[in-house]
Image: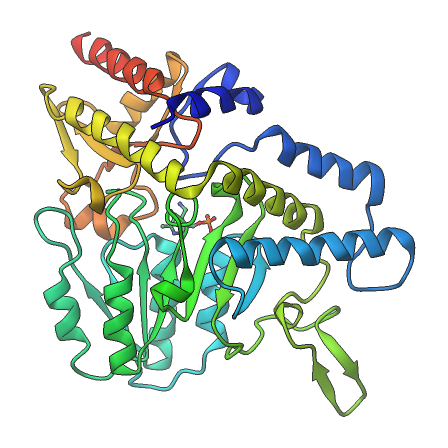
Length: 394
Ligand code: PMP
């Protein structure tokens, strides 16, 4: 692993001069080229997109469109439609609202889901839709036997996370997609913790929808993506920018992503997300994954040797991403996070928007969660461990 690349890129993230940021599963930091793209939009060509012909709108429209192209390529999704949203949550809700549901339709999801990939499906129960939740095994993996059994009777949609934002568990999305295809079931993958950390190829996975957050992968806040294989969704919003023509009687909706992006979008955010993608591609997602995986294995192996610490993680490195949850006996997770903050180390604590999982694990106070990013170094991990030990010893 070329650790030097990752040590050097810290200079592109001025915010990291003051803190050790280990809360990347919540949101990541943006490198200077992304920040500069936002500034450049404001200073040089701020204007609307897809409307009018003046010089500024031509630049903005071209760059905004090109950002969609970059994102599609990044996830191997050029054959489908790539829609910009404000986050993963909006992308998933667009699927929930955009499909047609009938009483008795079944949705299969998992106990690992973030509320964003759980509540939109639960909301459909009022229409008579049945939501089934698959559990996990004692080693924090998805219970595939229960999953296969759930698909013996017809299921309209499977909605699963690519990776858990609490346990770091990577789900076997290709195997799940195979099962879904054989059953004629649609598959939505919540890629909020996938796209930022591992190479993603939606064509290879074989899913129908892939949703993720630009702000968790070096892009600006307020950016997210919904990729869909075919434009089978009814648009969640109607308005300007999404129609070819409108008369009092008839509406002709545009083809392509525009039909799902009514109203003025987050133009600078979308363009800057394209720059974040350039940044990630330049390093390479394989390298990023290897780097984060090496550090995660190092972190888990040390945590497991510490007294009073319980780690909740799948045993094998190939089944996890750089998200590690643990508890400290006799100490509330918020208390630990607070004390780490006093040492300039920023981690997440609590229930991580995954209440059903936390209650299933018997952890009503939640966990302390360390989540790595591309700029995390072995020195960061070692300093975190040393500080943790010091706090526990006190
Ligand atoms: N799904 C997962 C797995 C997540 O980790 C998150 C963010 N923590 C979300 C969905 C929601 O992302 P956003 O807040 O960007 O909508």
